[in-house]
Length: 266
Image (cartoon, rainbow, N blue to C red; front, side):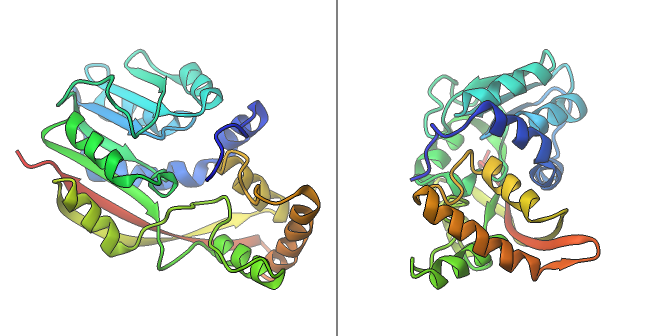
């Protein structure tokens, strides 16, 4: 299981600086929710609060409310520094939303966090409870069928080193398939409005940039289960494979994400 204890101030600040990829595709989720001024949004796994603040300033406005929940205190500290008065950042887990009353929110968003959650049923039950009737939920998640390029490269490196073929290794440890995501939402009582796979092309300056992004996004867990000397060897092998994706503009990698929109029946 990924550790929440590996995060550092440096990693939190790096994530805030390099999280454009998550921030950009999170806007697809915000647009799908069709938030209106005065509505309330709960952002689960809100990180450093960039998407929460965007929703607060440009979607629900000062008559609305955005609450971001994040288990990593150092990232919550950054979110609080950027928050507007109607954006509240709190330390907490998506599996326990007992601090909120039933029906407290118009919408819930989980942007690039669903694949970190081992107990998805518990999270969806909590989201169902805090949504008002007719409330909406939007989710983006790594896809089991179509892993990110970097996840496939890591899997290849591990297999070549005789460490078994596994996906991610400290990155997106609990992806879902298209069918699993729909079934999980329906089992929690939601009506599924849309599930689709989106493919994103990402440019990195060099292999170091890929590793910084992977390490900061995984709050220190990227290849973190290995001893330092083994990890160094794996990173060197990963660098060699990343060079094969390099062209005149840098390193080109693709991410494949499932996007789901559902609602709680009125």
